[in-house]
Image (cartoon, rainbow, N blue to C red; front, top):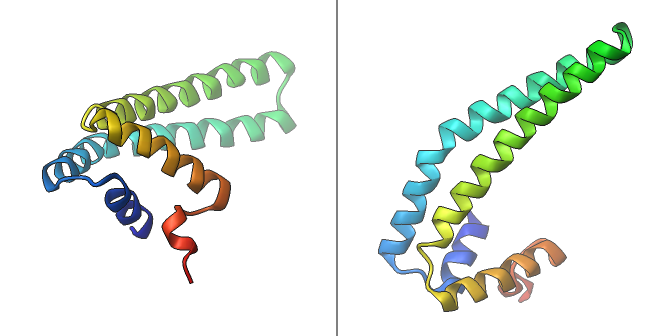
Length: 114
């Protein structure tokens, strides 16, 4: 929550933008959870097969795992694309900067103040 507040503040999101982004997230959440569950199950099945199955079965399960991973990534990418469309061009530039700072330091630059 703190991170999303920092992004909200750092981007200067309006209340309408914030509400629209939250709605996109909520609309996507059920599918993302379902797809994450499918990926987790496929990976667990793969891990069991590695020990007890022949190479053909293991390779078939690799396809299942990668298909599940692909579906999850596509859904997440589409959610982020829809969220991005809510932002102004200037906010998109700021978003990339904040995202990079979070990746580099684990939190946006504003959190470095002590």
